[in-house]
Amino acid sequence: MADLSSLIDNFGAYGVTDPEYYDRFDVKRGLRNADGTGVVAGITAVSNVHGYLTDEGIRVADEGKLTLRGYDIEDLVDSVTKEGRPGYEELAYLLWAGDLPSQKELDDFNERLDEWRDLPQGFVASLIMNTPSDKVMNMLARSILLLYADDPDGDSCEPEHEIDTAIQLLSRLPRIAVLSYLASQQTQKKPMYINPPQEGLSTAETFLFMLRPDREWKPEEAQMLDIMLMLHAEHGGGNNSTFTTRVLTSSGTDAYSAYAGGICSLKGPRHGGANLKVADMHRDLMETVDNWTDEGAVADYLTRVVRKEAYDKSGLIYGMGHAVYTKSDPRAVICKKYARDLAKGTEYEAQFELIETIERLAPEIFQQEKDSAKTICANIDMYSGLVYRIMGIPEELYTPLFACARLAGWAAHRFEEIVVGRRIIRPAYKAVNKYREYVPMDKREVIEQEEVTQDIEDEGAFAGRND
Image (tube, rainbow, N blue to C red; front, side, top):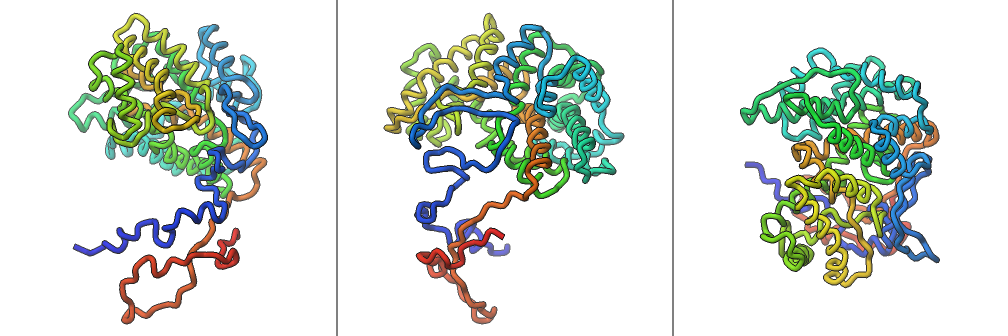
């Protein structure tokens, strides 16, 4: 077998072994400032994520607030819920057009979504059935790129084509996600069924219609899923997947490639894939702690998690903390409110109460164990898994559902980047390697990494150019 040990030994870190470089050159690792806030990299009118105040350069905790085109997310969710109608499509229209739609505009929008529900001839057989995978997020990315191949004007960035492409994917992604999941289950000898698209259904109803063998769902289930789609639809331009979409868009690439990139980013466990870690940690806690109402036992478990003695030894209480929010995540507050009603009187009510206990105990345990004054709160992932579990949605579809919802936000930011960005996003990296003379093959020896790493003192020595 070929020896690739030198490639493995030097993987990624070759020449960049001194963490002091970041402080010395004031490099914003992860595009984050020293206090954890994000480096301002753009301007947007799509949404605003508020989680703290700044007082004379000091970050001060504050109640979280999420506004979409100026509207409070809680008002948007509660308003349509009180009227007993779906709101995700209206919210998508708001994000793209900048204003809430009239009834006629919303009807036309929904009609166009209906027209796109079906998939191209042979799509299901050739991609989903012939190459099944239990990695549904990867199937979504592959599917989007295959749809590009089916579009004769795929590279067009004209407004009409961009809007039509976004509507197409908003319509089709839920079906693709469910079909991909079902195809992966067939490999485990489980029955495969393909429910054809039905006109007049909302995005949430379409998802449940596709997932259920009997094509049935309760109104409160469709309403709850619609709320989850609204909560996940958009969350500012700086989150990783949206920024990825904007970076790709700034290069002039096609819409399909930009959205596929957003999906690949969202898949990561530090981003959208975190919902699976929350669900898994809750499962471990429920299996470890016999009495869920014993707060002392729950606190002991969480303490051992923070000390890296329990669960995955990462020291993280999944579902707690956020890059922006401090005192509260408005999405989690809304999700919790509706999840309580969904769980009430069911076998899941005890699980809801346990999660409430985690949310209440975790901040104090974190501060004590970390000797930190940092304010942390539950994020939306704390309750989203429970909501999906109550509705019988498999874990393999948690993050794909997030992606289906976030397509609305990605598209809004892509439209904005096309119109007002007009410059490729190209941050600089500080180079810390020295010049080296070429060595002929017959004179080469294995050179230890420390021999080729230079302690850069001269700011001008091969300082990476922002070309």
